[in-house]
Length: 302
Image (cartoon, rainbow, N blue to C red):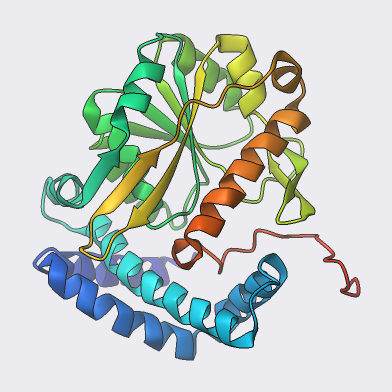
């Protein structure tokens, strides 16, 4: 990125982070949907991606239903944008205090039982509500590393990584992260995957997601097999009062055959992620280009 643009972005986000630091939560919940409706009007490219994804994934919705979901989805993005801006607050310790104030863990006993086995835990989540909320598990005393992508410009990556570190979380990326994950799990810690991202080969394997095969992170089954780590899914949802609930599901127990076959394990996990999206579609990231290189039934290949 051009250094001048990177510097301007730093000024913009740092200033915005300082401003939102003073916002009461109720004000964020009021302002966010207004910003979302503005994004809906001006963000033609991402709006088209969201419309296309919704049309293909939820064919049971009629035109009015799709438009209603799109509006609700952009209301969510407006609130999410304000939440993420807190990452850039220049006030020391602000982001952790903010996150601890708005994040609630549901079914935490499920997590505790899985972690108590002492073989590490694989936390599987997706782009639900505010996905950064799942990282707060690190603040509960369990070191977590999350597999993600390096952000640009570099200062942006450093800032986000530092705020995750303030919650006892680390970020890993690149092609040689599996040894780090194995080590972390064998030490009894947690490895997290945002599982609904597009993952190209060789890390990704084709898995059925909303009725089509799409490349999906394929390492979870192998990691569980080699370490004995428990697999726990967590979905996030934002309630009407603004609390973000991280909802832990019962430990997912895969068969030996599924664990030994990356594609089989990934199919199970992709199906569970899809079910969480269907349960709360307004708070998923429909603007994400999840379905790269997919030809939907009835569509003509590009």
